Length: 76
Image (cartoon, rainbow, N blue to C red):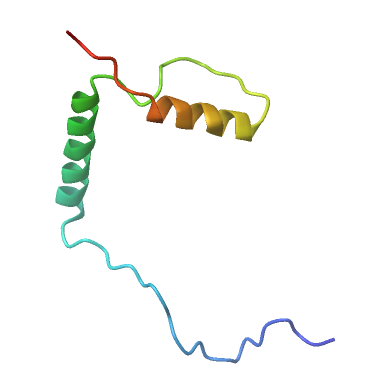
């Protein structure tokens, strides 16, 4: 019986290595402020709060896309 993976073989190339940010805390705080600004701009969350039950993941995904893409109510 032959092994599925040759453990002695060297890996030739790594593609897509991610570099960590130099100051992770500053990066995270910047991301958090961006999200807070986005929330203030919308003046509502992406989806209404509450507990929702769906029959399938597809139904839940469709509802989520509908809630995200709905237009913002106009204020006069």
